[in-house]
Image (cartoon, rainbow over all chains, first blue to last red; front, top):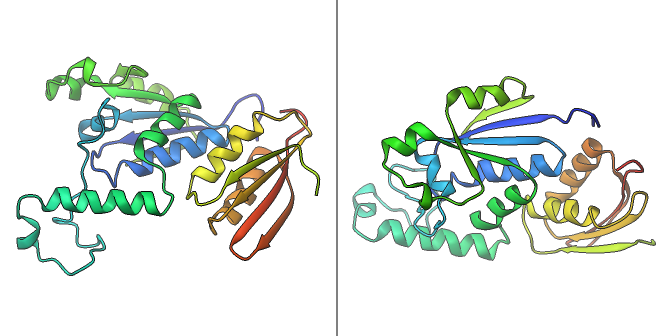
Length: 159
Length: 78
Protein backbone atom coordinates (compact mmCIF):
# COMPACT_ATOMS: atom_id res chain seq x y z
CA UNK A 1 0.00 0.00 0.00
CA UNK A 2 2.52 2.55 -1.07
CA UNK A 3 0.73 5.78 -1.78
CA UNK A 4 3.44 7.49 -3.76
CA UNK A 5 4.71 4.74 -6.01
CA UNK A 6 2.12 2.09 -6.82
CA UNK A 7 3.12 -1.51 -7.41
CA UNK A 8 3.48 -2.50 -11.03
CA UNK A 9 2.33 -5.54 -12.97
CA UNK A 10 3.65 -6.36 -16.43
CA UNK A 11 1.97 -9.09 -18.44
CA UNK A 12 2.70 -10.66 -21.79
CA UNK A 13 -0.42 -12.09 -23.45
CA UNK A 14 0.59 -14.52 -26.18
CA UNK A 15 -2.49 -16.69 -26.64
CA UNK A 16 -5.65 -15.99 -28.58
CA UNK A 17 -8.17 -18.62 -27.59
CA UNK A 18 -11.28 -17.89 -25.55
CA UNK A 19 -10.02 -19.77 -22.49
CA UNK A 20 -6.57 -18.18 -22.51
CA UNK A 21 -8.03 -14.72 -23.00
CA UNK A 22 -9.17 -14.81 -19.38
CA UNK A 23 -5.97 -14.89 -17.31
CA UNK A 24 -4.43 -11.65 -18.59
CA UNK A 25 -7.64 -9.63 -18.36
CA UNK A 26 -8.63 -11.07 -14.96
CA UNK A 27 -5.21 -10.42 -13.47
CA UNK A 28 -4.88 -6.98 -15.03
CA UNK A 29 -8.32 -5.74 -13.97
CA UNK A 30 -7.88 -7.12 -10.45
CA UNK A 31 -4.41 -5.65 -10.08
CA UNK A 32 -5.78 -2.29 -11.21
CA UNK A 33 -8.48 -2.60 -8.54
CA UNK A 34 -5.66 -3.17 -6.05
CA UNK A 35 -4.11 0.11 -7.22
CA UNK A 36 -1.37 -1.48 -9.31
CA UNK A 37 -0.15 0.23 -12.40
CA UNK A 38 -0.59 -2.35 -15.16
CA UNK A 39 0.64 -2.90 -18.69
CA UNK A 40 -0.15 -5.82 -20.97
CA UNK A 41 2.00 -6.53 -23.99
CA UNK A 42 0.07 -8.47 -26.63
CA UNK A 43 2.17 -10.51 -28.97
CA UNK A 44 1.54 -13.21 -31.58
CA UNK A 45 -1.90 -14.80 -31.08
CA UNK A 46 -2.48 -12.58 -28.07
CA UNK A 47 -3.17 -9.75 -30.52
CA UNK A 48 -6.56 -11.37 -31.12
CA UNK A 49 -7.55 -10.08 -27.68
CA UNK A 50 -7.29 -6.52 -28.95
CA UNK A 51 -9.55 -6.96 -31.97
CA UNK A 52 -12.70 -4.88 -32.14
CA UNK A 53 -14.64 -8.03 -32.91
CA UNK A 54 -14.01 -10.73 -30.33
CA UNK A 55 -16.84 -12.96 -31.53
CA UNK A 56 -14.53 -15.14 -33.59
CA UNK A 57 -12.44 -16.14 -30.63
CA UNK A 58 -12.79 -19.87 -30.04
CA UNK A 59 -11.80 -22.60 -27.65
CA UNK A 60 -10.73 -25.99 -28.95
CA UNK A 61 -10.94 -29.31 -27.13
CA UNK A 62 -8.51 -30.71 -29.71
CA UNK A 63 -5.15 -31.38 -28.15
CA UNK A 64 -6.55 -30.14 -24.85
CA UNK A 65 -7.22 -33.31 -22.86
CA UNK A 66 -7.85 -31.38 -19.62
CA UNK A 67 -10.90 -29.61 -21.02
CA UNK A 68 -13.99 -31.00 -19.30
CA UNK A 69 -16.43 -32.43 -21.84
CA UNK A 70 -19.98 -33.69 -21.22
CA UNK A 71 -19.03 -37.01 -22.85
CA UNK A 72 -15.58 -38.42 -23.52
CA UNK A 73 -14.54 -37.32 -26.98
CA UNK A 74 -11.66 -38.85 -28.93
CA UNK A 75 -9.45 -36.49 -30.91
CA UNK A 76 -10.70 -38.04 -34.13
CA UNK A 77 -14.23 -36.89 -33.33
CA UNK A 78 -13.04 -33.44 -32.30
CA UNK A 79 -11.60 -32.99 -35.78
CA UNK A 80 -15.05 -33.07 -37.38
CA UNK A 81 -15.93 -29.64 -38.83
CA UNK A 82 -18.11 -27.65 -36.47
CA UNK A 83 -16.84 -29.31 -33.30
CA UNK A 84 -14.75 -26.27 -32.37
CA UNK A 85 -17.69 -23.94 -32.80
CA UNK A 86 -19.84 -26.25 -30.75
CA UNK A 87 -17.29 -26.43 -27.94
CA UNK A 88 -17.03 -22.63 -28.05
CA UNK A 89 -20.79 -22.23 -27.85
CA UNK A 90 -20.97 -24.59 -24.89
CA UNK A 91 -18.15 -22.75 -23.15
CA UNK A 92 -19.85 -19.37 -23.66
CA UNK A 93 -23.11 -20.73 -22.26
CA UNK A 94 -21.27 -22.06 -19.22
CA UNK A 95 -19.49 -18.75 -18.74
CA UNK A 96 -22.78 -16.85 -18.75
CA UNK A 97 -24.58 -19.33 -16.49
CA UNK A 98 -21.84 -19.21 -13.84
CA UNK A 99 -21.75 -15.42 -13.64
CA UNK A 100 -18.28 -15.28 -15.15
CA UNK A 101 -17.56 -12.04 -16.98
CA UNK A 102 -17.30 -11.94 -20.76
CA UNK A 103 -13.94 -11.08 -22.27
CA UNK A 104 -15.49 -7.86 -23.63
CA UNK A 105 -16.51 -6.82 -20.11
CA UNK A 106 -13.13 -7.63 -18.57
CA UNK A 107 -11.33 -5.79 -21.33
CA UNK A 108 -13.57 -2.75 -20.80
CA UNK A 109 -12.88 -2.93 -17.06
CA UNK A 110 -9.15 -2.90 -17.81
CA UNK A 111 -9.47 0.11 -20.08
CA UNK A 112 -11.65 2.00 -17.60
CA UNK A 113 -9.17 1.42 -14.81
CA UNK A 114 -6.25 2.67 -16.84
CA UNK A 115 -4.52 -0.58 -17.81
CA UNK A 116 -2.14 0.17 -20.67
CA UNK A 117 -2.56 -2.15 -23.64
CA UNK A 118 0.37 -2.47 -26.01
CA UNK A 119 0.24 -4.33 -29.32
CA UNK A 120 3.44 -5.87 -30.61
CA UNK A 121 4.19 -3.94 -33.80
CA UNK A 122 6.31 -6.74 -35.24
CA UNK A 123 3.49 -9.31 -35.00
CA UNK A 124 1.00 -6.82 -36.42
CA UNK A 125 3.26 -6.51 -39.47
CA UNK A 126 3.98 -10.25 -39.59
CA UNK A 127 0.32 -11.20 -39.80
CA UNK A 128 -0.64 -8.22 -41.98
CA UNK A 129 -3.17 -7.03 -39.42
CA UNK A 130 -4.66 -3.61 -40.01
CA UNK A 131 -4.62 -1.01 -37.26
CA UNK A 132 -8.31 -0.54 -37.91
CA UNK A 133 -8.92 -4.18 -36.82
CA UNK A 134 -8.02 -3.17 -33.29
CA UNK A 135 -9.77 -1.15 -30.61
CA UNK A 136 -8.67 2.47 -30.33
CA UNK A 137 -7.39 2.32 -26.75
CA UNK A 138 -4.07 0.67 -27.56
CA UNK A 139 -0.52 1.64 -28.31
CA UNK A 140 1.95 -0.07 -30.59
CA UNK A 141 5.45 -0.95 -29.48
CA UNK A 142 8.24 -3.49 -29.38
CA UNK A 143 10.26 -5.51 -26.92
CA UNK A 144 12.16 -2.47 -25.68
CA UNK A 145 8.84 -0.74 -24.92
CA UNK A 146 7.84 -3.74 -22.83
CA UNK A 147 11.08 -3.71 -20.85
CA UNK A 148 10.81 -0.01 -20.11
CA UNK A 149 7.88 -0.89 -17.85
CA UNK A 150 8.68 -4.54 -17.05
CA UNK A 151 12.11 -3.64 -15.74
CA UNK A 152 10.51 -1.58 -12.99
CA UNK A 153 7.65 -3.96 -12.28
CA UNK A 154 7.03 -5.94 -9.12
CA UNK A 155 5.29 -8.79 -10.95
CA UNK A 156 6.03 -10.00 -14.47
CA UNK A 157 4.05 -12.81 -16.04
CA UNK A 158 4.10 -14.51 -19.42
CA UNK A 159 0.74 -15.92 -20.39
CA UNK B 1 -24.88 -2.17 10.54
CA UNK B 2 -25.06 1.29 9.01
CA UNK B 3 -23.67 1.94 5.57
CA UNK B 4 -23.55 4.75 3.02
CA UNK B 5 -23.84 2.80 -0.20
CA UNK B 6 -24.83 -0.69 -1.25
CA UNK B 7 -23.27 -2.78 -4.01
CA UNK B 8 -25.02 -5.89 -5.28
CA UNK B 9 -22.47 -8.41 -6.56
CA UNK B 10 -24.72 -11.46 -6.31
CA UNK B 11 -24.37 -14.19 -8.93
CA UNK B 12 -21.12 -12.70 -10.15
CA UNK B 13 -17.90 -14.66 -10.25
CA UNK B 14 -14.24 -13.73 -9.78
CA UNK B 15 -13.02 -11.05 -10.34
CA UNK B 16 -16.32 -9.17 -10.82
CA UNK B 17 -17.26 -8.73 -7.12
CA UNK B 18 -13.90 -7.06 -6.48
CA UNK B 19 -14.21 -4.89 -9.59
CA UNK B 20 -17.73 -3.80 -8.59
CA UNK B 21 -16.52 -3.08 -5.06
CA UNK B 22 -13.63 -0.98 -6.33
CA UNK B 23 -15.99 1.00 -8.55
CA UNK B 24 -18.46 1.59 -5.71
CA UNK B 25 -15.68 2.66 -3.35
CA UNK B 26 -14.91 5.36 -5.88
CA UNK B 27 -18.44 6.67 -5.37
CA UNK B 28 -18.27 7.12 -1.59
CA UNK B 29 -16.30 9.59 0.49
CA UNK B 30 -13.24 8.65 2.54
CA UNK B 31 -14.32 7.16 5.86
CA UNK B 32 -17.74 6.11 4.55
CA UNK B 33 -18.93 2.52 4.58
CA UNK B 34 -19.82 0.38 1.59
CA UNK B 35 -22.02 -2.69 1.91
CA UNK B 36 -21.36 -5.44 -0.65
CA UNK B 37 -23.43 -8.56 -1.11
CA UNK B 38 -21.85 -11.48 -2.96
CA UNK B 39 -22.60 -15.14 -3.54
CA UNK B 40 -19.19 -16.24 -4.80
CA UNK B 41 -17.65 -18.33 -1.99
CA UNK B 42 -14.20 -17.27 -3.20
CA UNK B 43 -15.08 -13.65 -2.49
CA UNK B 44 -14.55 -14.12 1.26
CA UNK B 45 -10.83 -14.63 0.93
CA UNK B 46 -10.66 -12.17 -1.95
CA UNK B 47 -12.25 -9.29 -0.03
CA UNK B 48 -9.96 -9.94 2.93
CA UNK B 49 -6.99 -9.81 0.55
CA UNK B 50 -8.38 -6.74 -1.20
CA UNK B 51 -8.70 -4.84 2.07
CA UNK B 52 -5.30 -5.93 3.32
CA UNK B 53 -3.64 -4.66 0.16
CA UNK B 54 -5.58 -1.45 -0.39
CA UNK B 55 -5.85 -0.29 3.22
CA UNK B 56 -9.65 -0.12 3.24
CA UNK B 57 -11.08 -1.62 6.42
CA UNK B 58 -13.23 -4.74 6.42
CA UNK B 59 -15.53 -3.86 9.32
CA UNK B 60 -17.78 -6.88 9.24
CA UNK B 61 -18.50 -10.04 7.30
CA UNK B 62 -21.83 -11.85 7.59
CA UNK B 63 -22.93 -15.07 6.02
CA UNK B 64 -26.56 -16.06 5.60
CA UNK B 65 -26.95 -19.32 3.70
CA UNK B 66 -24.91 -18.81 0.54
CA UNK B 67 -24.89 -15.02 0.68
CA UNK B 68 -21.96 -13.05 1.99
CA UNK B 69 -22.25 -9.45 3.13
CA UNK B 70 -19.19 -7.31 3.55
CA UNK B 71 -18.97 -3.89 5.19
CA UNK B 72 -15.93 -2.00 4.00
CA UNK B 73 -14.87 1.40 5.30
CA UNK B 74 -13.07 3.51 2.75
CA UNK B 75 -9.52 4.47 3.71
CA UNK B 76 -9.33 7.93 5.27
CA UNK B 77 -6.72 9.27 2.87
CA UNK B 78 -8.18 7.71 -0.28
